[in-house]
Image (cartoon, rainbow, N blue to C red; front, top):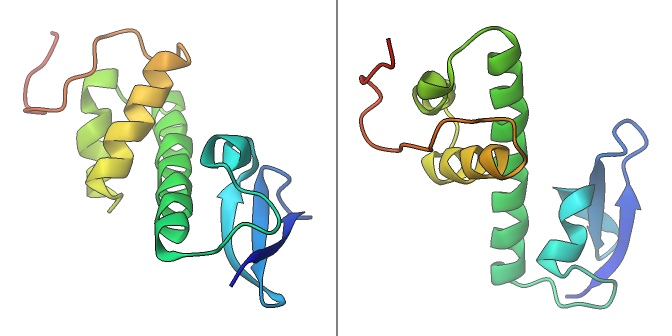
Length: 119
């Protein structure tokens, strides 16, 4: 099975559908297509599917982290809050690293105990 098309979702241009055998088998954040190396004609195998799924989980955790920050949740509590929302722990770690890289977070990432406080 190969990727037949990459279609931007009309309801959310930030997501792109991956079409295999005439149906959308997954969606991926549009900004991750190049990073993931997705292209029409590329084989749709388990490894590719896993990378796409992880990318989507990270994107969802990142979006929820931004909402939490806007709601006043402190940086030091993001990890705990996102996991409490049932986000995948690996996706949470990657999302927080992306937020640091993008400048949304200023304190060093800590993925150990969430009970520590800066106050």
